[in-house]
Length: 497
Ligand SMILES: Cc1ncc(COP(=O)(O)O)c(C=O)c1O
Image 1 (cartoon, rainbow, N blue to C red):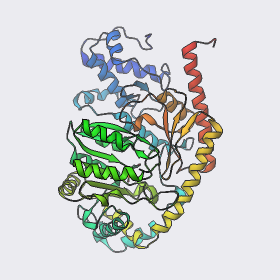
Image 2: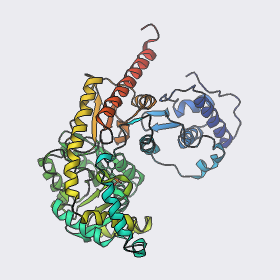
Image 3: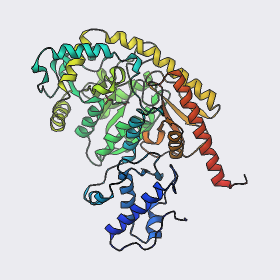
């Protein structure tokens, strides 16, 4: 490997060497000597060529990742990031990376942070941030509910029960009876977004070395929470009928699985539902083999046509935990979600919630309770679904228009996303970086898989963009795809090809 950084004259002592190597990489990346998306040498190569030990080489890359210069993907390597780092001039806090314990898989979190950050940029079409459609967020009604709540006096600004504000729990209990996710308000713990519900469930059930199965692909946040417990996360394939329950059954014979996490309706990222025979079999398996199931219903209400499938939890309420949220309809900024469970696991969830943040903003909970009381939520859902369905169709058409014959996109039955696989393989990290450079942000498929894959996949979100923006976004994505293909061909064959 011909090095783009100078490896000569390194000082002895692992701390000094680490610092020097980090500085040299930072300078080279900032000078543009490494292109966005470019792969760095492996830690083994770096250790050999810089004559440092492998731990030092690994520490250099970890530090570069912490500073925001590179992204590491397990099984694929370390890549130069496309965006300016978060803290480029803070190289004097190196001691922290020695003092801090290693963070598992920070690459997933980076992708999420970038998606959120880029959603605010005027120059970037965001096909990465799965937000509620702005046009249907009932801001005026939420505002009226907030005004009515605050008019009740200072009491509404007090802390509340850890489980949640009673009136919201009651309303969620009622919704739960209708949709099948809870038998009543006493099974509900209000959480700071469904994201916290997932995290509490992972911490309540899993310990280091336990085995958990997830859909592959799945929501990046599920992977993050499961992995952070130190559990072994096994990806089970999905197809247009949802999780492959036969493949799950094979995994169950091989491993002592403690938890299965899935989204049976409008799955993120595929937008598909679990088929009826697979639903039945999954419930039988949970009952027969006594494992927990984390049912994520965050998108379940957003079906494009017909009735939303019933939650599975009512079939086996002691085995299933259910997480839900208002984020995808009322807006993610309210951060109000819930988890439904019963028995000892519910008590553990409440204990963990007490340790974590005590309460999800009681004020926000009361605002949502007030809004739900108005009775307009079901009608809102009916307005949201056709808008999302139109946007999904526009995005699929734009893919056909700008990338004809290049992608296989699953047709979503609901939700905010389309999962698409490229027929030709290109470097996914390079495509991700090039897309951002050309003004469109997407979610790289690798961030949603428990295990590395050789295929090039993207999650494309249609909820936030107008039809024109979707077209423009895909046009930019096509330009990025062609640029990466050209570059890869050039790298393989040289300038004469
Ligand atoms: C499948 C899934 N579950 C949970 C969440 C987290 O939802 P919340 O914003 O309520 O934390 C998301 C958010 O994107 C999601 O896609």
